[in-house]
Length: 336
Image (tube, rainbow, N blue to C red; front, side):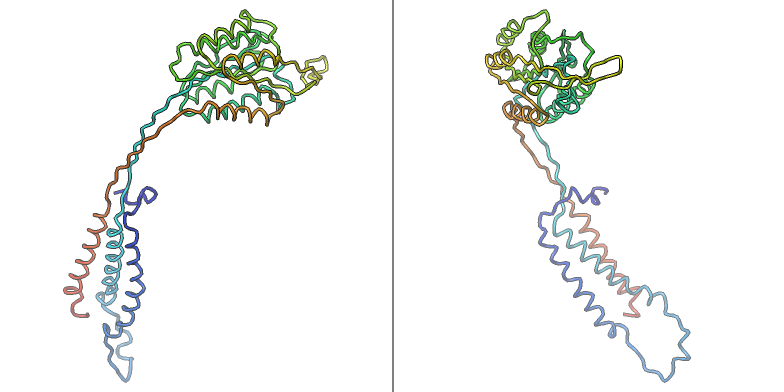
């Protein structure tokens, strides 16, 4: 019975029948108009003899008849409007894309030309990107002087976002091993079964260390048909960078060096695209563009099953009408 009161999930097949409720004002007017007829009066010269006489309980409860008639009309109107609930079943057919985010966490990612800094800005935008890919499997690789799989590809995006939130600079040996970051991301996608395999590699520097050369990593990516989108983050010229000194942390201007030629080559030869982000807004636009380019084809088939709810209302209307008739010709017969 609780479903009868869950009006948020109830619709009406014939709502036009609610027009019958316009009869309610007419019924009230008619009831008042015939009040004198239903309650005949007697003229007397003085009320002193009957002033203290209280009306009987049958007179007091007489309005119950009219109330029952009104309730019957309301219940009948709802029944004729055919209230019903719908149960929707959805079948989702997704082609699926497997994506690995490869994020540079070297010390230079603490530069503050992005707010609050490069690494935090990259994490925030990546979080939003993950939310836009509900049907895809995603993973996370971090790299600096070495690389590490922070989260294998998974459909559980809450786990991925939790791991992403814990990323910080300094957890790995410092340096910029772009080849290692790319190779580890490719390794995560080797056995992926999605229709497309994609890497989004973000860095702010030049490859200067690592066991795997970027060109070797590029050939590995091409052999596994992995598409790579590369992003270079950093303003032009110099950027403020926090440096520990004997007097505490001081801001120093450091030159921005991004190997755009390498990042462009990796993206072009794998069928991806190279982007340059100079501020937070540009970085957000880049991820939005990649999201559009790598849209997942999702087909949703919906099936609606309706359950009729008119019977309880019709039954209540009949009960009210029968009760009103029985009371009118039995209990209240002598005063009607």
